[in-house]
Image (cartoon, rainbow, N blue to C red):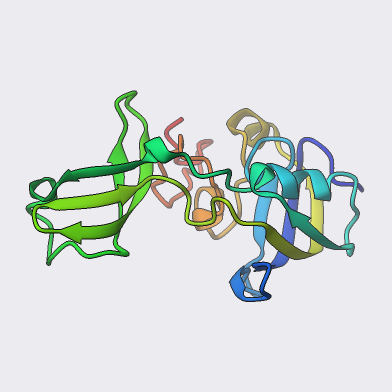
Length: 188
């Protein structure tokens, strides 16, 4: 079977930057599981895996535009420090938070600078502007179930909704438990 839209794919991967530094990798006991053609992974990797077969090894360099994008200056904002009151501890550079957008969505932001009464936050992905070098081994390919096709992501046994975090869709809220009576636990 080839990887095509509507297949559920299990992969092992190693992600490095252009200097060869390890950025991320899958756990050998728990591969990344995604559904092809539904935007569960970055576009460049999804395109590189299209048509591949079980057992294939794929090495690909992905440009920022097909990865985590190019930094957008409007995603960097200076906000009053008092917006962080009530949290445990002092706000520090490197911390990450979820913030609501004016449109009602939720994005991840990280603190890049703290000065006096102001905090600079960045909503760009930490890997924005970077080329991504993937070394991927395709472990398993199967057809998606009707329920998975309806939800747009795989339901992985033993891992709760989306395999316990394999879903990169920011529009899904996860409760980390499958409803074994027909639902995945995602609030779409």
